[in-house]
Amino acid sequence: MKKPHLLISTAWLLHLASWFLPAIKPGEFRPAIPGWQAFRYATCGIWACKGVQFDAWYYAVLSTISAITTLFFILASPWVVLRGSRSLRRGFAWAAAAAFIFNAHWMVIFGSERSELTIGYFLWWCSFLLLAIGLFGLAEGNRTETPQTRTAPHDF
Image: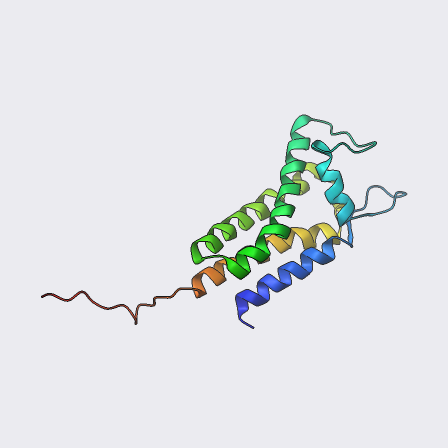
């Protein structure tokens, strides 16, 4: 297995595991929230959830964008890896890198309570980075023309 494929497969496995592992441990006496439930809470800005309200409108926007990055990962990355062109893979690699950077906002939002973020969050977050690195590698390794195969123009 090529290194980019190994990185991408690892990213997918981490992402899958993050759905079932605890992502948030809110407080001492409340149970940990698994990744799938954290995803559901992130969608509460556009899909109402009973008992969940955001403190400010921009928290709802950030959560919604975060949920969109997860959908991007799940729905788009397999297609891009299996069918995407070199330029599409590079574009999605940049999108995955941007999602990794963007999703770090949870550490900022949680502030002094960032210790409530648990293994599920970190696996989910790192899966974007591994996906980006793998897609960059796949895009570079997918070149059909190398410097050795180029032909010089002929003067006639």
